[in-house]
Length: 341
Image (cartoon, rainbow, N blue to C red; front, side, top):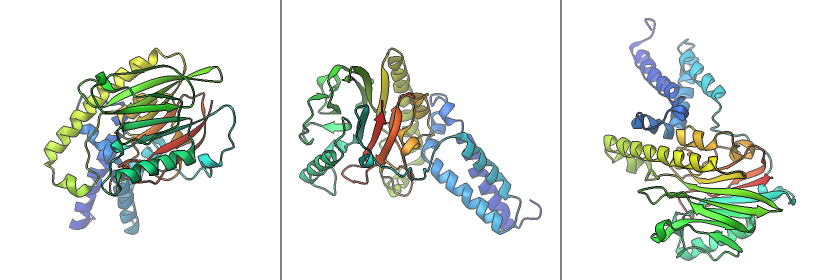
């Protein structure tokens, strides 16, 4: 430090802050949000922390300064930590897969009650209907589903799970295969919820979970967030993460009693760096990690590529293909996976 100029000392101080924050973020998947909710907010900005540390490495490298080691070491730890931020292309998409008897194609979409400032309700309805017609999934999981704005889908089986029969904006599971049992986890004091449906395919029963974890009520523009009081924002997000922990525990208890192979899909309202994702995934596969490509962004949030929608099959189920669809009828992008059962 003594050989650094005053400017570079300030840069290194800032570098140290970003390195420590990234290092702290590595414990977040194992750190229950209820212990210290504000800390969980870091899960949303980890891509920014990673990018900042990469820039600091480049900066010190250009100056040929050993200070590059700080961010370099933290990034090396992140590389071996196992959370996927970016995936090189697997080279295969769901529509390139030759259909077999043992396959299941599952589609998941937070439809934002089929409303958007850019498109009319009719454009959204026709666009979603066209997308589903082209992809032809066996199972569809909708979050923020509205019966009033939804397209008419030609599926023989469905379950909507209206919470207490009160809300028009619910979730939905559509299936080409018979649903023999369905139900709701009934998250308390929230519009969010989780549904399950047991389907029978070729004499094999599978459980589909459709998750919509506690919403963070994030505005998709950074400018709007900057106008909100920082303390208020962090407090609000912290309360949402606490609520997600309660919902996660409810899911884990429910999942333990399931004797079938499971596929969990939906909007987790949190990233792969979170306690919520870590606990719900458990030993399951992440379809994006297996066969996805790029950042896998599923939530439209300015420059930060947030992947908060997932398809997680049990470990004995093979992921054959995965795709994120670049359509903007909602503030989320739909995702699809082809699974070999």
